[in-house]
Length: 254
Image (tube, rainbow, N blue to C red; front, side):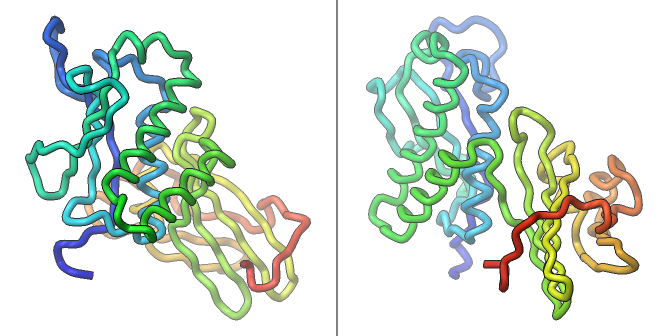
């Protein structure tokens, strides 16, 4: 991977100020286009699932989609706007009144479709990338807000632990999903823990160990790690006996 090639991190939504707008305007979507509670999470889920798969986005690792009525309605254009090499802008043409008249379900569906189409526009000449984008779209259609993003896997001769997270599933708090596979007893257990912000997982879980029937997580020893972990119980651990047992067990955990 070249030094200028980055793995995608985030997809965000913005809006371009209409001529007749009165009041404070910061460009973040929500002033003109009346978004839903889930709008911003949609971009985060897509970006973080692609991030899990080490999706190379280019010099940029953030994609900002601008909603605007200043271009042809329904059109998607790769914007020439440049503020930082790590940000790529895409403009999407839609009138505020058209968007605002939609139901919450249709707004979320439109935002998801526009995000997928924006990615396809940016990588239209790369079949491998298009394949990954379509795969994410299929997973979103299947699992909706409960799509799981794998963060960390630890495996030994006796167990395998898979750490995933969900971003605001069903408009609730984000969640850590812990899957514990006991190879000796051939059992599979699962549990979840709430996350106040999905990004907290990056600081809460640095090292993982199993001891005395507990899965123990060690936080990152950084200032951000201290801030993030201050919101949670210490030590941050899970009793394996309290995890929910799954009836199925998969050899090799494919």
